[in-house]
Amino acid sequence: MLASGSAECQLKLPAARATRTQVLSMEYGVILPNVGPLADIESLAHIARSAEHLGYAGVFLSDHIAIPTDLRSAYPYRSDGRFPLTASDRILEPVTTLAYLAAVTTRLHLGFSVLVLPYRHPVLNAKMLGTLDVISNGRLIVGAGVGWMEEEFVALDSNFAARGAVTDEHITLLKAFWTNPEPDVRGAHYSVTGLGMAPPPVSQPHPPIWTGGISPPALRRAANLADGWHGVRQSPTDVARVAARIGELRASRGETMDGFTISLRAGLDVTDEPFVGSSRTPLRGSPEQVAVDLAEYQGAGLEYLVVEPRAATPEQLIEQLGRFAAVDRP
Image (cartoon, rainbow, N blue to C red; front, side):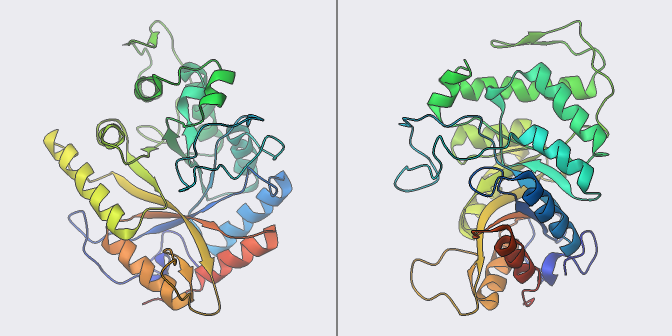
């Protein structure tokens, strides 16, 4: 069993090359299926409580509001560009769902992988997310993204073309409201002054914000505005490359990587037999293969791994979490 925050947690990975002044351990989170056929609140609560019992550090939700019936935007995380959900699939909105999960767990981080910031107004978002951090006693992690589904932007009357700049200003406003009793932010898309917001978040100085993406603007956003980077299905080599580049960008600003988290969302499929063939992806295969992958990720500088188990039922998902928690340590 994982035991978050202790020396016995972290699957006892071997000491590896660190990206900080000391060797860093890894934390482990779980993607909960709040979109798709398993999006049932009691199932999510059951999985979350099981993850907490097994010693995982956090649970994370995806973000979509409504899927168009005629989707044309290409999904950036599959080679064929096809999005695996349809307009008839279930979606539980992530902010309200995390509020429910905050009430049925006691220790888990509560995060987004990721919340599409341009879908929501930053003032309202600052209040809702700040409240979520308060009622969860400081357990919120704000995974933040710019989004990719143009049809969803149109439905929400949001600016798809300017989503990167809007996201940057959104992050600035969140931090301003969470750390300043009288924020004064003036930008091209949002200008806010003369407002206060209480109570402040429990997390100090504010809930951590992780941004994703591997494009040059995305890496600059992470280095300049965020407290961490949150990748999707990257190999250990990719993670090492991203961590190095973010380190360079932060160094150019006179900042170190101390306090900055390198995190990743990755599929998980622990099998009885080794996976044979060139199509194997990291974290898919026998416990021995997965243990090697974990060591390579840690060596690449990964600090927080959020696994997304392959499962058709909540029971299968929980079984995968148990298998992963029991992986033989290298």
